Length: 113
Image (cartoon, rainbow, N blue to C red):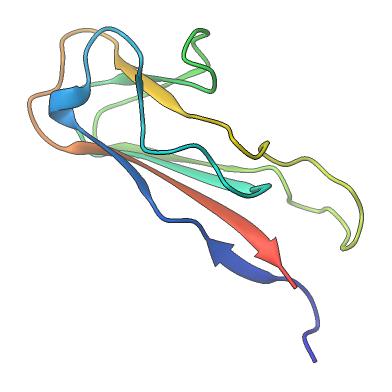
């Protein structure tokens, strides 16, 4: 018998440096679950802007850095909470000058019974 939810992970989303410019580009495919933890890894050599809709700038991510958003922290089990909507497509664009190496990675984590 499980005592709580199990951590599950969607397949990583990736965008190679060659696909990143000054305009928003999608990073992999849209989310497929109501995800509670989002991990962003900018392993390129340029600062990037991240967007949840490909229009609005949401947050910058410096070169060779990462950022984790845990929207499910301190939520009781079996209670509706804050999650990333199913079908959310993430986007990135270069802030100043396109990267010349590396990739952008986004990983979504969710809980399952």
